[in-house]
Length: 592
Image 1 (tube, rainbow, N blue to C red):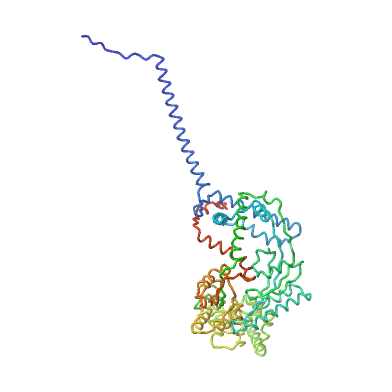
Image 2 (image 1 turned 180 degrees about the vertical axis):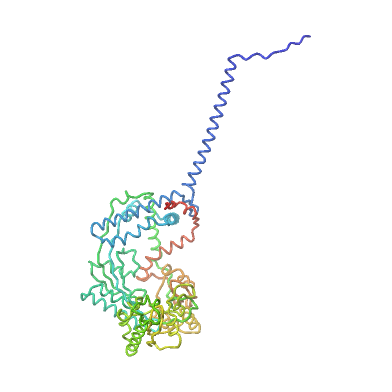
């Protein structure tokens, strides 16, 4: 059999063209797919980067995320509000309603806020607080109406009434060597304040009376500048009196503060509220969101006040013994109370260290100091006037208050104290006043301090350090002493004259440490020592009742209750914060 070889047929031109087309299509499809994949990768990278830069959470409140853009948006809003507020102050200045100095004072805070290093962290805290309140309001059925939001816009765009407030105050101070204020000390302070008020009423210039009152160790006189009623930290009755004055230069009555200072006030100007009609238009960021949150906070605050101010709550009647922590650390030794004058070579205490002790100027200083001692031993009551006389006294630090120093622990007389802080540098004076038991009003022989001159000292009293005094009080009470009696002898706060009777107190009225001590102590018992707010303190709980707050307590609670309640709410809220992420949002400082 013959086998024939088959030959593959030659492709026709049509088939070749078909294969080329198929190949081109495949290549095109592959190319398009590659481009699509590349674009997808680019898009994915873009989306990821965009999310990382904008949508990534930097904070969450109970799982509710707050992203970077929300923080940036709030910063923009805060800055625009500060800028607009400064513009409003500028309008008031240009209209002559506030002075250039007042404009500089009131605008300094918003101007600094615009460039604050904490712009982003502050914005994040605001958003977290708003989220916390929003969640609380949702759970408790608290809502806001369109009318409330509209009212909040009006409030936000209004500069409240401002008054330039001047205060003259006199503190009740104990007469050394006593540590606590007596009823007579309090009456003396009231009489002195009444004397100053009478001087102003009789036509003496306020500035002159203010200078006179500040020239004593009990002076508490100040110029508060332009003040808004809701932001003043004075006692509510005095604040009300200030904002009830009918016209500039009218005078309030004298009010006794909870700090024991007797005050009266005047106002030099009254600036009516200013409504910025374009406030909302000038805002950046989510202004509506901010306004809704502000209105909701007001609604929540009203709810809290109703619960703790307008409704009977558990209150406690409390006695207290409080001793100021002083200027030293525990263990730094006893304290002394002195008044001093300096007699420096060439009348220049600041340059005394540069003058050789052999210089005749030192002999002259010693001669003047000896003469002063002779005068004062004949009549110690002249010390105050001589110390204020700059032609006699070369000291420029304490002369304006008659050379009267506060109670000073032994360690503070050193140039450097045990804790590393700067001291008085009067070690020779310390030796003289601590060497032997001295009688109050003793005039000590001139003491040479090469850093300042010859020091003439009136010794007024010596007492144990604050930590020791409060410990002694605790021991006396534990041994059976009457709490009120010990309070009169030891306590340094104004209620000492009433046996430490602090009156009735409610939750959110006191600082946290005090509240915990007061409400954790059994009725009839004495609390553990509380250290904070500048005092060592112990409390006796006399009685407990469910009652409405007294008017003075209610006024305090209206200022303090919501802030304390909000802090407590925040501490019980699950808040996560990416501190590094928030810090990174702040633009880098420009290269110098």
